[in-house]
Length: 481
Image 1 (tube, rainbow, N blue to C red):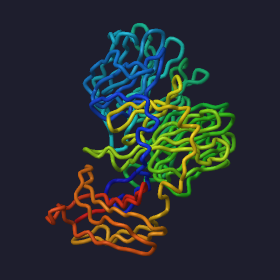
Image 2 (cartoon, one colour):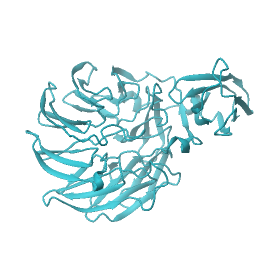
Image 3 (cartoon, helix red, strand yellow):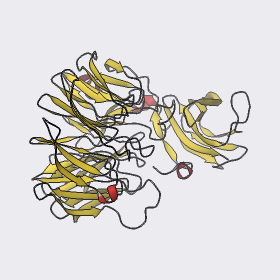
């Protein structure tokens, strides 16, 4: 993800406009804004935060609301539970509530506003609190890691990043060492008993190639003696947990970010990416690639293992503003070879980690909803790729881009299909449908003259060209100067 002037010439992705919407849905719960907070279930209650500044507790079996709690900022962190208390972060403040009633137990008020909201357009997740013995640890946007006594909220542990750089990684604690990362791409190991940082390491060297490159903002995992993480660069990292020295890294040839949270099962590391649109399965000890799977759009969440399947979510990271809620997808691929089992469109962008409960897969979406899906039906169904229209439209080109007066859109039709070409504003507002009709095999082009449906010139800015073929579409960001 680069700044807009850089991504303007980037083909965003291919996605499926599938008729499967609602096919697996058991229930849904509507909020008032996007959901980036990873939900969790405890004792049949589903807990999650929302960008409507509300923390929700709902019945995980039917979606009925049990209680809600209002804060003064978006809630993009996940939650942690100890005894009868649930913890989450909002606006650089730490909250401890009674998990059954939503009653306040204690609140830590942070006077710093640094990094309290989204730092950039792809800053989806704040650090989730982690619990170790009687201490709950929070990472904050002002670079502080604080450990609070669970029952009282008294501060027992304090650490900080270099230069007070924002902390977005969900930390991990192993053998008395607290591991975390910062927005400058630096990983840290903090000895809790000794109250000192024993090592820190920059995960890239040299000047970043663009402004949003390099940050550490994924979950960390310690496995044996390895600290595993992704980052806003094309590398999957395995550092020595004791020294911080690299044990191995896997370089993604397609570039982009390793934006997903890692999962490890039976010595296999599963992790997703952003602009390379891939899920990777690697040997956790060596970094050797077992397989990769090319998905639709971008992954900013953690894959989960369900039997012989890896289940994960995706969404369009370039459709995340205004009224543009993007397209979200749920996938199941074979965990041994990466072959596709099933996928389905589920509302808007899904940047939350799927969770399993009582035969359900539960996800939160950009379209303001929590969805509960029939997990048995989903993972037991094989999708028919041919019916989706995959590869019916190929090799789309957009030139010149940026443009002043007009832009030419060319494409190939490989099998007879219906084609619809739509122009959207960056915010998601439909500007003009410039073509709709049936096409036979061949090469085609159409020109957009930078006008709306009434043939009035649209102002300079960023627009999205969408080419639809049956259930499949390609999208491109274009710039009118």
